[in-house]
Length: 168
Image (cartoon, rainbow, N blue to C red; front, side, top):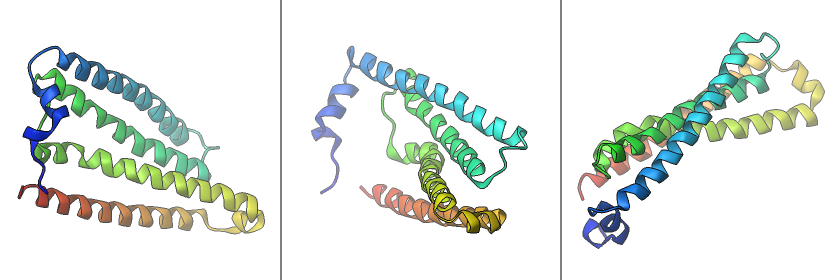
């Protein structure tokens, strides 16, 4: 069944003229403020990790990677805020896709990096001798490889959906 905006009650309510735009502005404005806080803290983590020589372990690098990915994800929250500020309220999916694909992909990569950080900590506790002897650069290269494969897969799936949605 194809999507029909004329039957979507939420779309009709928020797209109509009236004070409803204040709800959208407040919601997306709060999200943008919250994202600003996240950007500052994530930038701080990345900056401190890069500047500090003592934070060069694989766990610290994984945490900095996750923060860098989340920083870009947080920038994506400004799109909806700027759309509402412009008075448009909603934009078509074909435009939204290109504005948000990079933040969404990096947000997904941030989640995968959290999993890798947890596995890294678990192996450090469960196998401490092996953990100290392993090659951390190979481990991080493997993590990057998996993340890039996952991002490629994620992009292909989203792009196929994008192409299918243009036919609606």
